Amino acid sequence: MMTTDTTAPARGRRRGSYAKTGATRQAILDAALEVFSQSGYRSGSLRDIATRVGMSEAGLLHHFRNKGAMLEAVLEERDDRARALVPIESDDGAEVLRGLVALAAHNASSPGVVELYTTLSAEATSSDHPAHGYFVRRYEYTRGNIERSFQWLRDEGLLRHGMTPRRAAVAAVALMDGLQVQWLLDRDSLDMAEELRALFATFVDIDWTRLRDQSDPASDRPAPAGRDEEVGP
Image (cartoon, rainbow, N blue to C red; front, side):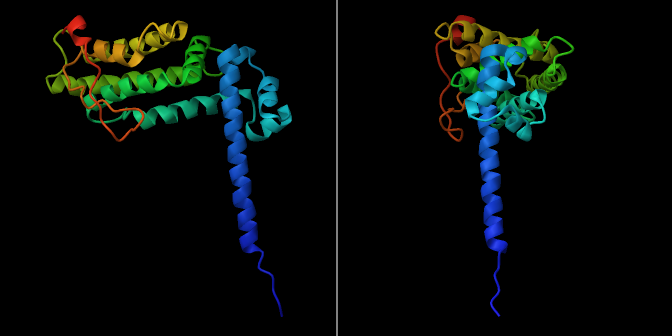
């Protein structure tokens, strides 16, 4: 008796379905990034996002239960990309700072992501904003890990006199966010990565020659030269 094994074709169909769903989800996130960056979270509409991906609002809600869930997914994707560049929980404080500078260089190639984060972080100061809790937790997590990096640097004798790990961590976060705003206003006015590296050099005395090239995360390149002389210890 002939039998028909439908298992393999079914698996193939499921794999294809999953791949299609993943591609659709990514297209929605890319469109949401554009809409939220241009209009802000509150003004950016599901209709605009749906139009960009050629589907209905009901279709969007098949992948994300609501607009807030979509925003959370966009922010999580940004964090995943950042963690690939910054070993934020590393025990090597110098490597964390080099990673932050590498992230600033990478962000210069992703203005939409930078604009979204900057806009949302300002909007989310309102306690009723759906991303309020996210940003509170994110700043606490980021400050805490950077402070731990500066504590390591202090223990290694690399933190400059008069600077405390806590103050250095607060200043580091403020520098990164402030540089992003200035850069968004005029992208020819400054190099975010170079300015951040030069300012970090006023806090710590570490080797910057291991700063990683963003075109090849596995490679090393010399740090930009010419600013330490201006800033000084």
